[in-house]
Length: 352
Image (cartoon, rainbow, N blue to C red; front, side):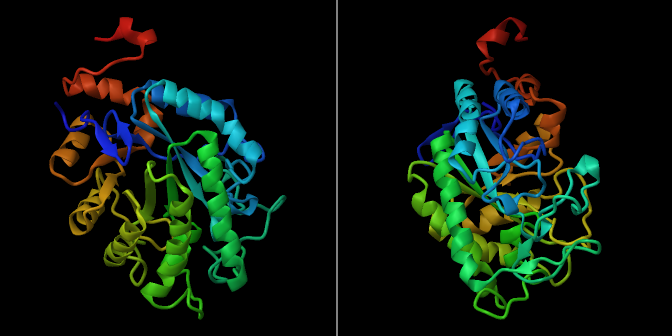
């Protein structure tokens, strides 16, 4: 049996293989509501054989959206709208997952195909640990008041409860790519003078408070994931050693898997992008902490994914753009690795 198509159990969930669909923003929601596009986008990856299908970064509040087209889960109506999507994913023997997020200072922007720059018409006030803009041309965010932190934590808690009501079975807390919780972690964006800024312990405080609150309301039999940026790729910023400290604390809370990404906090980042460039982060975090990890980033072939798992560099493989190019990558990869897996009964006549 191949490593890629060997099932894995996390808490009480059984995943049929190690292929997980990364959360990928589609910028196609209306007032936070998922549309037919989201059903087809996520549903086709479930039909294609992925073991876990994760919905995009879904905002815990309207002001937490990256763009007006982001999905949200700040009301019961949003949870209701997701139900047909989670139901369909489960009908394909895949696990429905959701990434809950707040964009912080990177909120209130246009969709990428509209340039991705800050909104002018319809813009909203952004917020962050400190009043430091993301880049030139971005408005300075409002510094979050100490008294507002509990409110934001409650938004994550409410989003978690609604995710369960919507039928999701895995929640991932978004702590990466320069969004709000990552902004608290990095000394480049967090210049607070209270107990939430300064030392590593202080900078970790709010992200850990949010994660702890989420874990407390998320069922014990369901896994909790956290996506981190293992490094800012900027000197003096967040880095792997700090990530290892963070993961040790997340482990104590009951986080089951670290989704190992990187970057996104600063336009000054210098990344040497090449196949598997983020896999070393997954390898080191898994080895140093004993926490399960997911590898992500320019993983495109079945052989490459198989080798990562075989070497013990990750427990699962998160795919993004390769699954945009080929929703049926798992079915094709099984053939490439000579693994005999089941196909949807509607497609069995085409199975090689």
